[in-house]
Image (cartoon, rainbow, N blue to C red):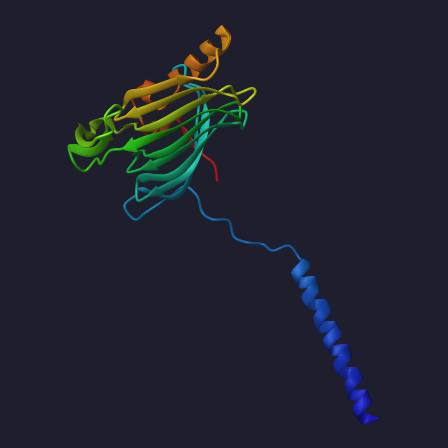
Length: 219
């Protein structure tokens, strides 16, 4: 009888503990938010940053977020317009574009491409190129003051239906191959040209920190 009573007590205790554990697991977990817009001991941007830029000089306002490494922009960065629609996904290294980029029209993809970032620590950088006719590889020396350049395949899409319209191949910013996949309407051609004018290689700059008076930071 004593053993039976002890068994009942233990069973009740386990039931209470199990119920308490289940309640704890169901309770919302309050995790601390990762800090944003932080600076290191030298006052340089470090870690995740969220930057909002107001419209200025004909340029639309936008919000971008990504990572800094002690003042150096690197990794994948995202840009949104004032409506919250995706504008661009870009890859950075040493503060310049380097790697795959994607550009959007009101959240709809219209271009993918590849940029090659140049090493800002040296006056010149060396890039391997391939002759489009002989396919022989060679090295080309380029000045690093231009930041980065188109180097790879760029594809343009109709942002409405997603159809591939145009494909271009670049080597050190020189067009070596081009193919039109369909004859688009005049309005589509104008739209693509407008998109191209907004891309980094048309603006002559690949990363310029916004002026301090024009930034608002939001955590």
